[in-house]
Image 1: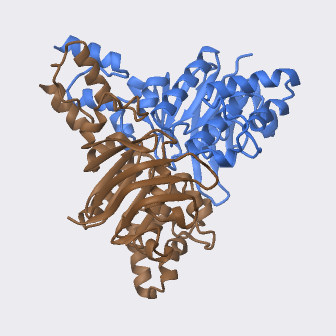
Image 2 (image 1 turned 90 degrees about the vertical axis):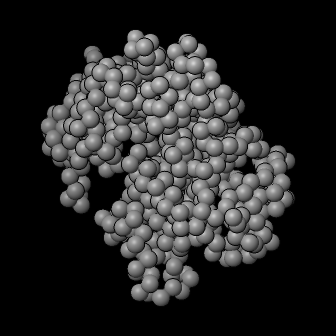
Image 3 (image 1 turned 180 degrees about the vertical axis):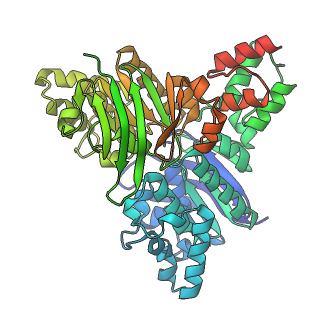
Length: 281
Length: 269
């Protein structure tokens, strides 16, 4: 087991502010692992994503302390070029991620490889591979700006995947996508992890996290409030307090326990297969 | 006059030649809560953008109350139809939230002394109290979405269109938007929402329209629409969680809410 992401006692506040957004974060992600982070809006999820991917402190500045190690290098003291060659970040607003330098989706996806000086033949092949994987063949000749939010999000994911980073940071990567698009993105994360990529995903879609993440952390008020398997964390009685919510499977089972329709010590379900098992008994 | 929305044989073709709506006929009675579901690219946004005149029909008609939208400009239609964009950044422009929210009613000619009240009410409803003086740029995407919502609520139009209101919202945000839909309904206003969140849809709407390839392929109350598994598969829509569960459990009766689910569980025991 190799830690690809290792955060130790990370504190952070934005420039010209006193308030700490992150107040002592310890967290690791191994190669081949999908780790999820849930939490209410405004608790520091996007900030944490930027810390791991080096945008903090390299682009945004601020007061950062503690250890941020990614793929063997210390992010704050390495060059941004070293960091971005290892870590890919997909942000929640795909529109902000479009380079603005390219006229077609194909060129947009190739932009990062082009900057690295990857040979043309290899570039064409790698772009074609991610385009096929994400099923966006019909978008490649269009302008990145003439796309729907969901389509832009897929293009942003493709642009990051084509770089084949060893560490993937996904900040609400499915916020604009329909259910089948969301599922596809989670399937891709799983398949990249099976080939050794370390994936950390910040998401509100609990059912998909239950199916895909190996470990789930709850971020509340700048600290990790809970850690466990997705089933343990998402069936916790405090999920509403954390602003994470619960699936209808969990809520229905909890109500059934309260009304004596299920035994008191029932392990609450989070996903459909969990629920079928619980309610069939 | 009742503010029904009547869409007849609507066809819309983009200048590029892509047909986004291929013969849509629906009536949305005033006061209804209608959810439109379907894959990205099914034509959902194109359809609702006909309600406030952003798009004009290529063929067919769209009527809002006694107005045909043909030839009517967006400003006129804005008195009847409030439209909350999916991407708030297409909508927000003012330097602080108070001005942003006051802009709509001001433009509608609402008397000056009524505006602070409207702004306060909308802030309250959208869960933004305390952020009045903030620049929209300093807010998170989920907060900016709620500013966009508040600025449309302040216009107090008889029809409110919400384009994917729950995307990027956390559990509290989704619950808050559910409350807004319920309040608008109590006031007798029509709510049309595009959503990918089928659980939100089942719990907050009277009627569900399933769209695929520019056509309406299923239409009914949530229980019936979500039982149309053929149409849902064609539209790549996954039924709500409790519907999927009761189907797996082999129950005959559809369920929309936790209460209904638990009641059936009791009966089946």
